[in-house]
Amino acid sequence: MNPKLQTAEVDHLFDAILTLKNREECYKLFSDVCTIKELLAMAQRFEVAMMLEQKMTYLDIAEKVGASTATISRVNRSLTYGEDGYNLVFKRLGLKD
Image 1 (cartoon, rainbow, N blue to C red):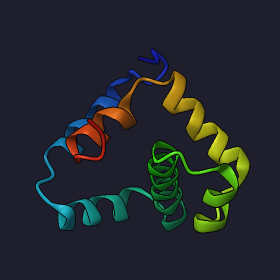
Image 2: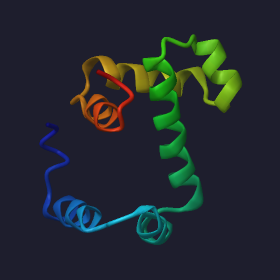
Image 3: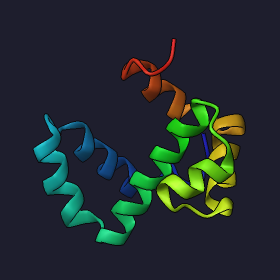
Image 4: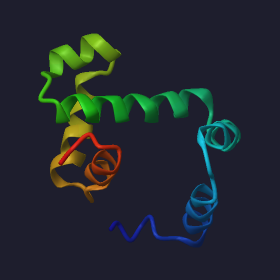
């Protein structure tokens, strides 16, 4: 885990997120915490990760979600060398064995 991220403020945010019970509550908190652009960017990165997991090409992903190849590459790097957060969630969503 990246020690630069481990701050009391980030802990407080994550603790708040962990109290959410459903999608509607997520919309409420994330609409307050994030700008529309920030939230859409996070959603786009998650979509890119799911498509990479399905072995789609960069070109197909870029055309489908409008992500730049730099964004796709960054997400791919996280999937390959990151903390396995995407894989953890994919497994819990039943998207991966």
